[in-house]
Each structure stands twice: as C-alpha cells, then as structure tokens.
Image (cartoon, rainbow, N blue to C red; front, side, top):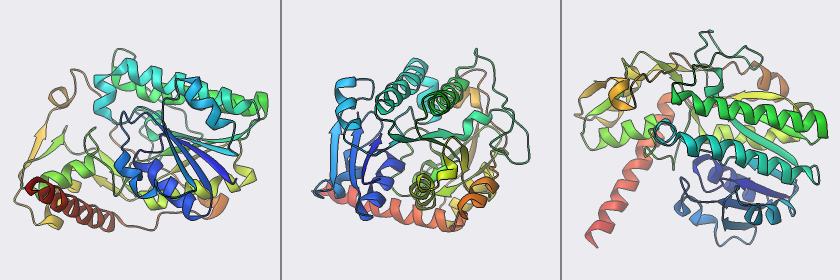
Length: 331
C-alpha cells in the first residue's frame, strides 16, 4: 500500500487520515467535491509532493476512475454528513451514499484494488443492547421517517462491499465509526461537540436536542485514524466489519455541563424538542455504545484519550480559530 486514494479526503476525518498517511511516506490522492469538505482542512498538505488533490465527484466516472487506476488501496469516506443534512436533503443522502459507493467499488474491482469502507454506528438503529456488536441484529425505523435513510443507505453500502469480497474476491474492510471528534470538525451539520463548544465560548445558549438523556461515546480522531491505518495491514480483517469508537458513555445533557465547566462559560442550557430541531416525528437513538472487543482482539486497538482530554483539546482549537477569525475581521 504505497499509493492511496481517499474519497472525501478534504473532510474532517479524511484530512486527518491523509496527513497520517503522508507522514508514513505514502503517496496520497484525494478526491472531494467540497460539498461538505474544505480546502482549509488540507491546506497544510498541498505543497507536499506526495499529496495530490482533485476537486471532483465520485458520481462522475471521469473524475473517479483515473485516480482509482493508479492507486494500491482506497479509503472510501465520501458520503452525506450530519443529521441536519440528512433530514434536509434525503435525496442527496441516498443517491450520494449508494451511487457513489457503487461507482467506487466497480472501479476498484477492475484490478481488485483493496478498499476500506467507512460506515456508521447509525446502522444499529434503535437497538437497546448494552453495547453494539458487529454481529447484532439491526433495528431500523420505518421509511416514513427520513432520518433512517442515512442508516439504510450506509447499510446497503456494507452489503454491497461485502458482496464484492465474496463474489469477486476484492479485498474489502468495513468499519462502523462512532461519534468521532477533534480538530477541524465543524458544527455546521449538527455535530454536537463543536456546536456546544462554539456556543459556550461565546456565552450563547447551549441547545440540547430532545431531553438530553440520550447517551453517546466520543472518540478522538487521532485514535480513529490510528485504527484506520492499521486495519488494512491485517489479513484476517478482510471481509469483516469492525466497530471503531470509545466506550466512555455520557449523556448529552452531561456533555453540555462539562463543556460549560471547562470553558467557564455563562451559557444557559436549553432543551429543544426534536420536532423543533429537525422535523416532525424525528426519532433518535437513545444509546450508542460500541463493543470494541473484536478490533481489540485483532490488533490490540483501543482509544487512548478520555472525554475530558478530547473536550479540552477541542476547546483550545476553537479558541485559536476564533482568535484568527477576529484578526481577519479587523484587517
């Protein structure tokens, strides 16, 4: 794996992965249509001779196939991002996720190029297990609630990727990411940690969707990237699905309190019903806790950063961003 393509590589996680692979000495190619990614995320890589960026869409074979043809491995990140975008643009979500993945897999299959598909914890749906295991049955809501279109489209991506492995013997790895956070993540599409931090630093109300009792686990992007880089080096991982995430569970209300405490903010905490925040009849997952036994047994991976460490780093990053934005505003 010397020449690597990252679809959606100008996004939050993709840009961190690109940075890590370039540091390892890999030649990295990124394709991104910049619909949710940003050139700012990869600006520090643009002058590196081992980094190549193409503004283009995986829905366009003329953009995609020349890149696939010259690489040894593909990380497929390009997809709709964030609950707000999914609710607002369900057609874009479904088409981009399914057609895009079809195109990438078909292009890769010509030379049996290995591929890692990034899926999501959303596929577990409304399951109430204590922790989600990769072989659990899945419980998805009805199609009348568009919120579940993202989960279903990503689950279909998983089925398709694994079918390429079973039928065409193309090496495929599938990972389900759980709430990844860190530098460069934006709150623009509803991501809860940067949204809370930005509000707290400005002493604005911290808005909590629903009753705040829903729980999540937040994993730092550097820990996630470490797993993503290591997994394709494991022959036993081919054709398998792996959870990647933290197991440190926190309620969203407690998360807001921690952010307020760590920022010494004067912000109020405000509860907003889901119907008001998103759409009538919106459903959410009450718990989202991964079992990471499978990936630990494979290669000893587990997160290294605690939630408070993650929040403190996110706060420091956002403070620096706000200072730079203020300087630009004065010039």
